Image (cartoon, rainbow, N blue to C red):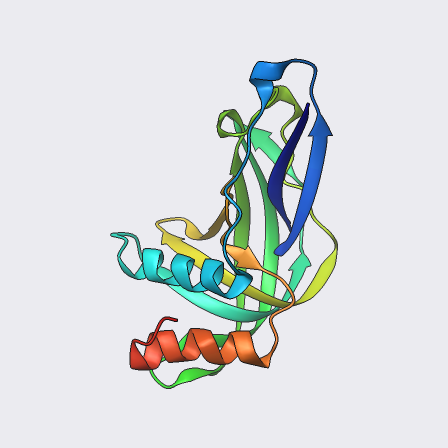
Length: 168
């Protein structure tokens, strides 16, 4: 049986399938009706969250080495791009953040946990959560907090959702 899960590699969504031995080991994420719907649904969920987020579209670069501590794998990164504001994407920004994966929330052996990344990715839409220690890009097994290959139509859809409240 195969285990398929969505990983975010330096902000770029990639599908990874891992073979498992045993029928009870299956983990399947629901297939969203469209990528646009997945992004807009995530945007709506963060606006309804008690946590504070910033939304940035830009280029993501790895700035340090991956480390693991207390069951959490993390990787320091940086994004340079434009931040979503009152009138859409506009203000140029550079933010340092941490890509974080809670290992025991992943299927499989928590000892094999890794953040996974590529050195540099462009056109990435990030939903960065504010914490007392800085900005964090959280890993989610189904769905994500980072989306790659954002074109003009997806960018306009996120802006319309934020500025006009039209999230379709």
